[in-house]
Image (cartoon, rainbow, N blue to C red):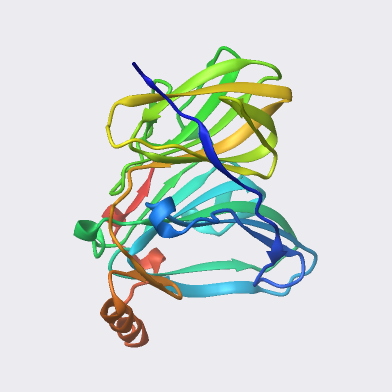
Length: 288
């Protein structure tokens, strides 16, 4: 019998003043400990309504994990790494990378940026950047449900994006009052972040701006997420990933296995040993 997923925890994260200054609201979506959220470390919903041309942001390093940036509204970046609404970028920081996120003009932007843990065996892999634009994202419509799949396999779709940590990332929309089912492995840690409307899973309703964490099982068989949209329909982003089972040591922009890793990474960064993302070899910059 196929396992039925249900909502076990609901969080309602609140917006906080962001580090980019005036007009920046940052909402910490993940409110669970890493033992509960594994392989997801953090997820920020960054909303920026910038009114001036004073530059904000800048270059900074990362190592030991992947950033997964989904553009919800607006545009960000320059050149072939520029992002528009509906685009996604997965940056494997791995052994260490420097990247730049600078906004120097009036902008209205909303992004979801996830920090995804790398398994121990892959924690210090060579850095890699993958960009996929909205027009290349696999998409389908099934009985009044639309799915855009950025990572993994879901609803008969498979994303070309390469994964070290198995993960499904999808933007899902349901028409008002409709019912549908998505299937994900039962042993994938899964949460939904509601962007619009409401959806009922089992006997629990999730509303806009809420996060619903689903129950999880140890087996890899497919499980059912039965959904009923509310009267205004529903739109949510689903994150579903296989836990690494590893302990982590987070500090600043780095994720290590222990404190020695953190000290080593700061030393390598200070010595200029981490390359900027734009200087990576072509084979480490993938555009789908």
